[in-house]
Length: 155
Image 1 (cartoon, rainbow, N blue to C red):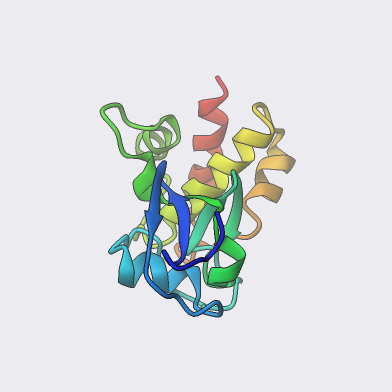
Image 2: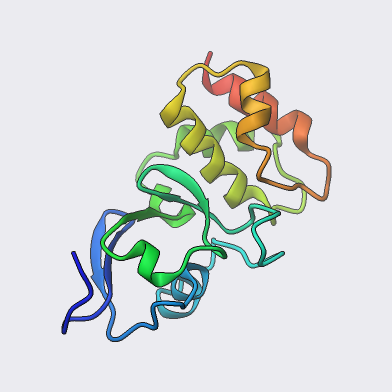
C-alpha cells in the first residue's frame, strides 16, 4: 500500500486502516493515540530510551515515538490493544500471574517487547530475555518478576 489520494494506510491490529492526509514526519505514537484513540501505547521519554511506546512493526519491537508516518506506510503494526481477544494472551497472563508490574506504566511496552522476542526465539535464555528487554525501562524495578514471567511462558 502506498500513500495515494485515499491517504495514509497500514494494517493496524489486523485491520487495514486509512487516514486522510498525514504528514510524512508525523510520529506513529501520535497517530495511534490521537487519531486511533489507542492509548495503551504510552508516552514517556519521547526519544526511544524507555520502551513505554513499544509496538510491533512487521513483528519486531519498535519505539513508536521514533517512527515517522512515512516509515509505517503499508506496514503491519500491532499495539497492546491488538492482543485483546476472547482468551487472554499468554504473555499478559504470565505478567499477571507473576506480578510483573507495579505502577503498570511500562507494562504494555514490556509485553510488546516480549511478544517480539518470543516470535523470534521461542525459548530464549535468561541472557537473551534480558537483552530482549534492554530497550524497556521499569522505574519501579520490577525486572525480576518480568523475567520470571517470560520464563514461565516457556514452561
